[in-house]
Image (cartoon, rainbow, N blue to C red; front, side):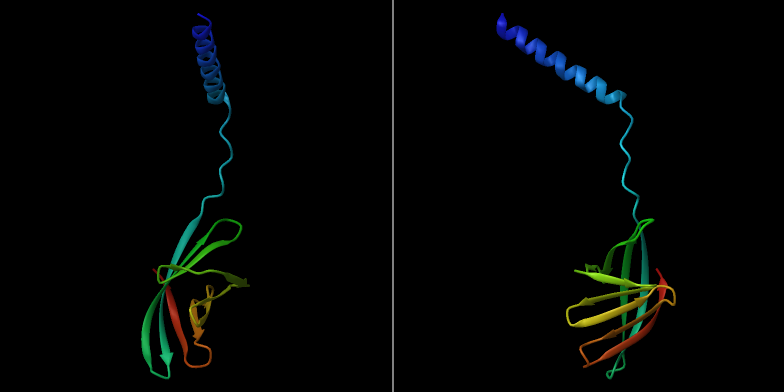
Length: 119
């Protein structure tokens, strides 16, 4: 009998807390992130080859949250005005989001410049 009363009391407490949780206003959610994709046609010198590079930039109302280049998340990035500075492998990359341009450098061995368009 005593065990049955304990079970009933536990069930009542659980139902009471579930009912009170339904009456609480919903918690404020985090700002919704948005993503923009840039497709950049970069010409690499001295080979004079053109590579299509895809840049995905995730942001919210406050700041840039993530950067991916060719589907690979970058480890770290910095922002200077409208320019995103980052690196993938040995390539140092600068993406100017206002001018929509790409420039990069392979540690002095090769360079690239190109235009970007929203994809």
